[in-house]
Amino acid sequence: MDISIENIRKEFERFPALHDVSLDIRSGELIALLGPSGSGKTTLLRLIAGLEFLTSGRILFGNEDASHKSVQERNVGFVFQHYALFKHMTVADNVGFGLRVRPRSQRPSRAEIRRRAEELLELVQLPGLGKRFPAQLSGGQRQRVALARALAIEPRVLLLDEPFGALDAKVRRELRRWLRELHERTGHTTVFVTHDQEEAMELADRVVVMSNGKIEQVGSADDIYDAPASPFVFSFIGASNALRVHVEAGRVYLDDRPLELPRTNLPDGPARLYLRPHDLEVSRDEAGSIPGVISAVRRTSGARLIELEIGGRRDRLEIELPAEQSHRLNGRLAVRPRKWQLYRDDECRLAS
Amino acid sequence: MAHAAGVIFRQPSVIPGFGLALGFTLIYLSAIVLIPLLALVVKSAGLGWSDFWRLATDARTLAALRLSFGAALVAAMINAVFGLLLAWVLVRYRFPGRRLIDAFIDLPFALPTAVAGIALTALYAPNGWVGQFLAPLGLKVAYTPLGVIVALTFVSLPFIVRTVEPVLAEIDRELEEASATLGATRLQTVSKVVLPSLLPALMTGFALALARAVGEYGSVIFIAGNIPYVSEIAPLLIVIRLEEFNYGAATAVAAVMLAISFSMLLLINLIQAWSRRRFGHGA
Ligand SMILES: Nc1ncnc2c1ncn2[C@@H]1O[C@H](COP(=O)(O)OP(=O)(O)OP(=O)(O)O)[C@@H](O)[C@H]1O
Ligand SMILES: [Mg+2]
Image (cartoon, rainbow over all chains, first blue to last red; front, top):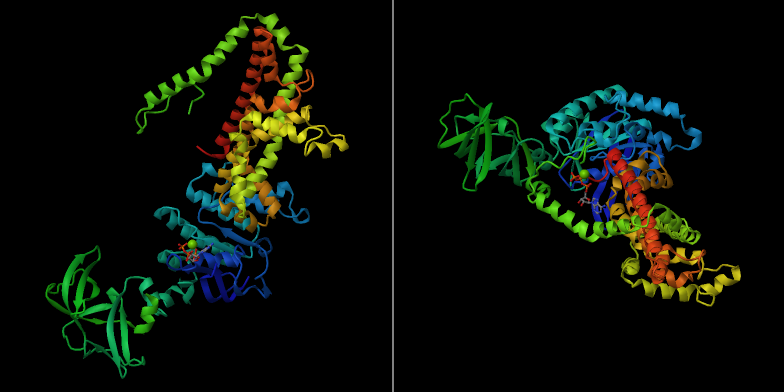
C-alpha cells in the first residue's frame, strides 16, 4: 500500500510538533524515521496510524484519503516500544486478538484463529509458546509476540515505534537482522522509528531524517551519508567537524587565506565547512590547506585521532589518521580535505 | 513466597531488620486480632457442640445471618458496578467539580455511622425526601431489608472507588491504543482489555467493601427497623443477646459470623493469588 503524507501539520495545544511534513512511502518499502529526541518521529507514526489527528494536511492510503478515518478503519499494525501486550491473555490469545474482535460476519472460526496464531508464532520464531503468558517471556520474545499480533490483522502498513529500544545491544542486532529478513519474506510496507543511526542505515531502504518537527532529508543510507542535504544531517549522522570560513567570489577563505578547494557557487559571506574526521589527510604544504596546532593525540583500535586547534578562534578539528602513519605528532600540522560540504552560515545556525 | 513443600522463609535480603519486623508483626497481630478471636472461639467451644449447633441454627439467628451476609453481598456488588463507574469518571475525565466529588467519596469513611444512619432514615422514611416519592410506587425502603442494603451500599462505597482508582490511573494508555489498532471497538477494548486488567483491584475492593458491610452496625440499626426475622442484622442480634445476658447465644452467632467472613476473605485471597501467579500482576 502506497502512503502519501501531504503537507501535514500537528499541534499539541498550539505547540507545533510537526510542521509541513510531506513524504511518499512506496508499497513494500522499509522506511526508517531517524532523528533526535523530540523531533516528532513518534508523532508522525501515530498520525499515520490514526492514534492522533492532523491539525492540517492529508494522509492518503493508496488513493483514498485516510485523514479522517478512525484507527480501527485504517487497518494498520502498530508495535509499541514497550510491547503493550495484554497481560491477562496467553500469547496465542494476544496474537489472535485482532481476529477475535472482528464483526461476526468477518470473524474466522475459533479453530481457524488458533491455527493462524500458531502460524504467526512460527513466523516470528516462537513456535509452541502460545500457552505462556507475556510475563513468562523475555523482552525480545515479547517484542516478537507484539509483532505477530500486529501482523495477524493483515495490516496495510506496519508501524513500529522504536521496536528494539528497550532491548540490549546483542538482542537488538539479532532482531534487526531478523526483521529485515521477515520484511523481505512478507513484503509489508513498513515504517519504523529509531534514534539509532546504525539501525536506520542497516535496516531501511530509505531513511527519513527529522529534526524539530521537519523532515531534513529522505534518502538511502548512501545519500544521507555522502550527500547530506543540510548541516544538521551532516552533523547528526556520523562524526563531523565544522570550520568557520568565508566565501568571496566563489573562493573559500580560512582566516583570510584561500583554501585550495574548487570554486563554489555559494553567495559571498560567512559559511561553514563541514568535514568528517576520516576525510582529512596530512598535507606537506601549509599553503591552500588547513593549518593548526596539535592539542591532543589518541589511539583507538584501528586509527589515531588527532585534535587540531585552528587559528586563534579555537575551532577544533578532529582528524582520523591510519594508526601506522608516523608523522611528527606534536606542534603544527596542516591537513587537506578529501571530501567536504560547504553550507551558508545562516543555514547552520538554524540547524544548531 | 511460601513453597508447597512447607514454609520457607525469604532468603536473607539486603534490607536489614527482617527478624525484628516479623517478630513485631506477629506480636502486634496477635494482640490486636488473634487473641480476641481466639477468646471468641474458646468461649463458643465451651458451649459444647450440640448447644452450639442449636444456638447457631436457631431460626432467628439464621434469618439475621442471611440478611447480614446477603445484604452485604448485594451492597458490595452494587458498588462493584457503580464504584467502578465513579472511579472511571474520576480518573478519565476532567470536569469542574471533580475534586469536590472526589472528596465526597470519602465521606462514608469519615462520617460517624450513626449520623449516616439517621440521615438515611430521614431520607427514606415514608414521609422523607426520597421516601415520599417511593411510597406511591409501593416501594418501602426504611424498616425493610432494602433499607439495610441502602445503608450498607452507602458505607462500603469508598472501598471500591479507592482501590480501583489508582490501578485504573496506572493502566497504560498504549494497551488501549494497541487494542484499537487491532480493530477493537471502544466497547470491546473496555470489556476485553481494561476490565480484565482491573479485575484484581476490583476484587480487592469488593472484599474490603464486603467485610465492611458485614461488620456494619451503626448506620443499619436506624434504617432497618430491626424487626426480628425480617430486618434484624446479625451484629444487632449479638447485642440483643448480650443485653439478655445470654452470652452463649451471643458467642455462637459471633463465631458463625467469624467463620463465614474468614472463609469469604480466604476465598477471595486465593482467587487473587491465583490470578497474580497466572498473569504476573503486581508483585
Ligand atoms: N500528547 C502530547 N502533548 C503535548 N506535546 C506533545 C505530545 N506528544 C508529543 N508532544 C511534543 O511533540 C514533540 C515531538 O514529540 P515526539 O514524541 O513525536 O518525539 P520523538 O521524535 O518521538 O522523540 P523520542 O525520540 O524522544 O521518542 C515533542 O516536543 C513533544 O514534547
Ligand atoms: Mg518517540
